[in-house]
Image (cartoon, rainbow, N blue to C red):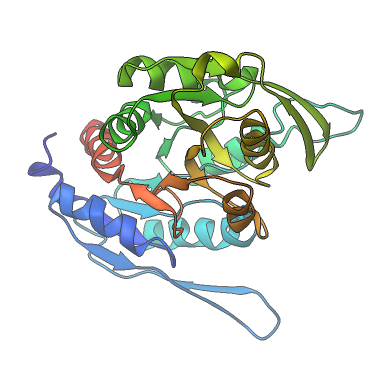
Length: 303
């Protein structure tokens, strides 16, 4: 399916997702219909969908940061679209929640990645997400029983770095980021360095800078797939500055930024913080809607 023919799909945007849904709809040549979400006095969700369900595949756009607040309204919206005659119902969740707990670290812990995947697989017909946090899981197909597309945006980040940061060196904050940082650096045609991180607790990390002397004449660009508590990025910026490196530019895909972590990173000495528009945030700079739209077009065509 080309974007011109993908207009048969109709996008249903959850509150807070209107801008990204609009950009995806523009790329597909289709329309956006808002999903109304309100609360009854007892706190239960009231969800209402609109649009022309009977003739168009329905695509719900709902990034899943703060997923506990959104998951029931999302399931209700998918159910309402089915009840009103939508053919397939797909989900665009640019940020996909519950990818962290992929094993039981202590006896009795729920492996939430599996449970969450089962719930979504039973509620929608396909899924598109952006750079999911796949650590010990090889691919989304290993946990989702529906077609699930992981959109990769390292090339978009590399393009932004090439256009906006002169004489860069890509910095991965820990060993887990090696493959990601290497991909960005190779596409941008710049060197990369991986720092060493030791997690002390859920919100405390210790970062060391092994070879910073090599790159004192370059601008560090710290890249990561997400900024959650912000502690890893914060400690990376502090250690780079303490080691005498120039003020780093920080780039992430998903802008979660719990609490005051965003201004804290800037106060620590970051020159700039840049994110993609998977989660609406003031740091959004890199638009990935065209890549998401291409994935939606492909899956809509398959269905």
